[in-house]
Length: 346
Image (cartoon, rainbow, N blue to C red; front, side):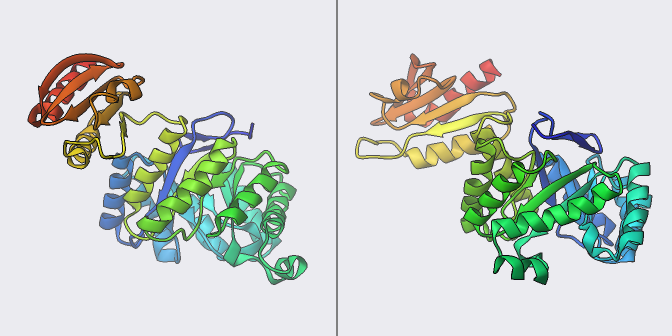
């Protein structure tokens, strides 16, 4: 088990639930747009939000943003230690920076002292595209060992300052490489690990890469907090991350839909019905398993584990609970009657 840290009110590691993170794509100097997006991310179920801090104007605007939201905010810092100091002064809950890249030991000591004073953790974030020339030459390119060595170099800088309130990420767009790196570092340190596949791409390809990469690690017990990195609306990242956690049984996020694939026996508009049920289930907060099946003969048996479900054939259907038929209804009333059962359970 990893050691536990706190990012604001959110516990990470040490047996705490795996948390979901995302990052705004607004300008941090644009308070209205940034606050609106953070609030939208929180409504979608995001536990921690990171914002870019590319310059001092962005850093100085953090307090106004933080005071308008109710979710821990992490400042994303690169190269300039002054941005880290200003972000801490503005009240951020966490830092994402690499101490070896902010300008020398004296600057590291300043940032560490400020972070310690306010109990602010630091995430060391190593990406395949940001490895030093020395490390690349040593390993002949980007390898799992190179990613781990780079991360440990940064870890040692903070440890030398008696700072241990940190988490680590080792990200690449290459899934096997990322898996190998996280497996290796999980054997070397007990710091919490932030897991993700960076630059995963658009929703079409990025969801698959993220589900395979993040899901594989979580299934092995590796990972304390996650981000799904997709091109576009960050709210989608949160929804995908929650589905990954729900699929692995690591978090409970309302109702779960199971639906059979269509086949030659299907004689109702299963695709349309399943889509309608899935949309309506988004408003159901109770931990229920709901089945949409296309065959009356096999449906209740195949979905016996479902709390409630429907199955249809030739213009009619059945409502069932835990595999037991409750009643028969016309196909046109299947969804309505299903949600009557759901309401009675919820």
